[in-house]
Length: 382
Image (cartoon, rainbow, N blue to C red; front, top):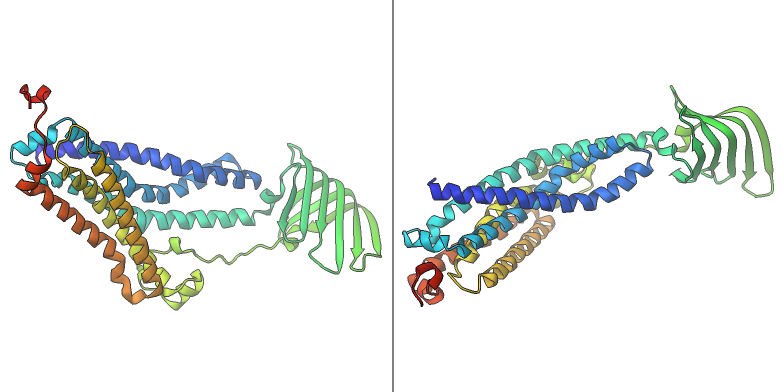
């Protein structure tokens, strides 16, 4: 690559990193709020929240990379046009096709990064995220050690703690168990402890009372106790068999779905194949986005009023291509044999780019759309 190509590429990469950071922060804040409320309400620490946030970042970065590539391409092209750098370079013999070289190299770099994320980092991080979520869901102690709230760890079970001391002692405990329709059990105690045993977590209550209300609502049995152990694991349903989700699977598994994978994910073969090809098209669309931002603006030529019309047209074209990509994915879901349709948006995007570069390279088109060089640049009035 020539010096001018490296100059443009450096500008593209710098702005790409800046816009990616901004978009990732926006996406992250939206997800972090819900994630924070969920984890903190379950009694988890801030370290667990940071771990879950880090595991969700690869997928967020994958989503924003094509958008950042398009915005960086539009911004750099607009600035080159505003500073008359494109006019100077074109006067030296650079054609629109030649000027597209650094934008193509930039698109390939973004596509390579997107490929690594989509095919490797996102499935691995999603798998780890789901594994940790399952571990936390099975951590009964963390789910129940919340002060001043009525918790429902499972259907029919209500648990309340007034206070948890630094030593781990539970004060003023109430446990209501209506999982058995034939009787309603209510346990209350002044003190309690959650301890682990070979049979699972046990709630050991001290100085309390057990009330048993039969199904007819007429018989109430009250028993006081000094010590009582309640099997928490028996009252809380924990699913030890976790099935993998669609995003956890590797691309080869998606493109070649087996009956076991379809049964595990509860998805059809079309949905799996569509997801696999969608990961491939995401990288290709990154190339299209970077070239489209340049091609749409280069067709406008020089104008004292800027290139806002070309920018608006580029945004409309990106929306159109994204709509085609969504439609193609929907077709593949319903008919897996039509998987080439998934690449329709990429093909049409490349054709649009070539058409715009062809128009920009036509001398008649350039003479008709280009305006005279301003007086403050050439020193001569137009």
